[in-house]
Length: 312
Image (cartoon, rainbow, N blue to C red):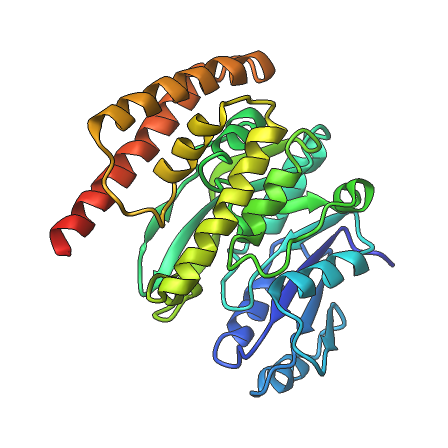
């Protein structure tokens, strides 16, 4: 019998955390789910720990060659038979109400294709992070700057990726989810719940930390982010001159640390105004959100660059 939801979990060397992750899913208030764990050639005892769970709702698939996070996700998504697919990382914790809450909301709102929400940090950081973008138009416009649909909170209709042919880009240095959502602009109705759907583990040696400490990786990440943002501009039917687009990409890059003169800052405000007017034609009633979100992002990056200059 096919379950309502399949939880897809890529796993690589997670012996310290995978038991807690699985236990949190098995404690869901809604029991009609299946778990597919795809082991990406772990060299620790992760698989042994998974096998210690004697629950028929768990399927472990072991690969003898390392594929990578995005590739494993694509394989897992292609195997899902249930109507809904839930995304989960192998070191995070799922609150007991999550699957029931998301399933109920999706069945009551058949127009929604992807449903995410907020998360609670734990580990080497703490704090509740609730979504800044709620509606599909807000989420898709915010994808110009970053992902506001948190990957680990997402539940989506399984038919979505199968029908559109959209898949994760490999070797995108942790930005695979952002690129996936951008590729679905105009093809999917996205929504965020104003609720915490995940306990997100912040590690001391996360991929973000590793990239920030490596100049070549930072350079590669900047190039990837430019590709994603350019695609978002295209998919949102926004038209900028080449010079304006380059300034936009540089200004809103996490990895562009050079100071910007005031004249460029004023140009950015003009560019944002142009983008806002164009976006409003495609996504009605979003002008206030776009302006407040983009200015907030601009202020955040200005503060980061000032701090870097003072430290360096």
